[in-house]
Length: 396
Image 1: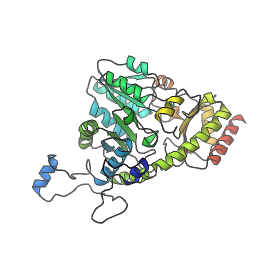
Image 2: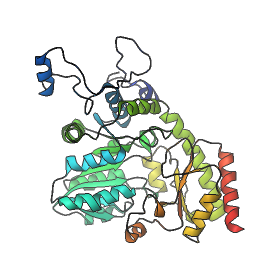
Image 3: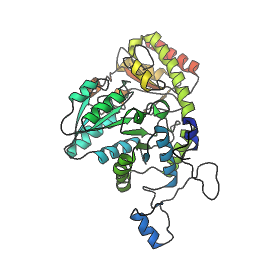
Image 4: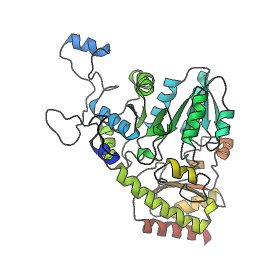
């Protein structure tokens, strides 16, 4: 397919990135090889010099991985995709590709715990400083800017607080500060939200989540213009070797084929579950952008196609109630992963954000009673009934 083909999202999710071999296979080919051969020493020299296109070594050139990169880039509306071994690998490569020692990042105070730890514990050692701000307060982002600021980084909706940030507004503010805006689009996927179209410079993904959709493989990706994703991020992959497995790329290709359908069902089920929890617990305790009382509801309605499959809610007695509730559930798996066909449940304060300081947890709204549910593809009736019986355990 070419960039000029007028095909829709679902068609590109199935057909983009296909380069059939001479065997004329229908499913995308899998290339489990570490290296590639050259017809001559001259050809090898030209490829290594960047003077001729073609595969060199699977650390940074593999046809199956490239097919995934092309398909995801098409769905996100970007010129170039670069795949990595994990979502955190993609984020690490983004920071390495964009930042120098002495520069400054403004970041959401409601991020995945490992991203916060990466900025606080690793990049600070190399002279990169960070200021964490409320993702939903654009003025706070501008107020945090210094002469050294080069990057704004956020997730929207955030993990696990479900705060919604205004991508277009923050893109304007980042660019006014001569900084880039990078958006982690893991929760929405391009099926629900396309940050590049709203002004973001780069999009990052944990392909492990919804892009796979069945919890099978680890992977990540960065998508954006060639001048950033190609010229600044790809060289990190080539040299540092944060490499996606060809097999994992093949699995993600299959996941992208059904992404649009799966996200519709995730959204349907999450709306049903959120509505039930709002009735039982009170809407003020449920964090889901699809609820009218959510502070980011109107913004999410504008910049997302639907509200996603993630939600969180607060239980009043803190960790004790949260653990009792989680242990009483029969359907959701107790695991920190999300975006799976299987519903999953976790207690962020003791798992995904356990290594984040108490102060940082509080600023991100991660209470001891907070429970996060990734609503899967099971029967919505069964999920609601299971939640109901678990809540009854708390009241018994």
